[in-house]
Length: 50
Image (cartoon, rainbow, N blue to C red):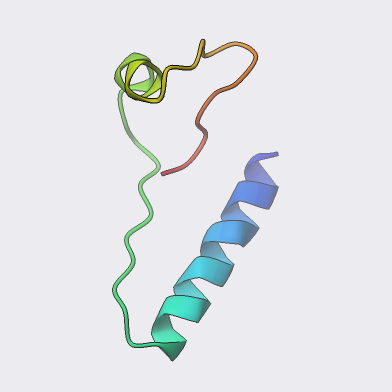
């Protein structure tokens, strides 16, 4: 799952470069805060990459 998230982010970076846009992947964040913002429980659904 983490490897897939990394591949998706890599494709985002490549796509952004093609349209001259900026991208910044974030791998460190406060889980509970993000779960609250997205209204998810953190167990069944959770964020692994921003």
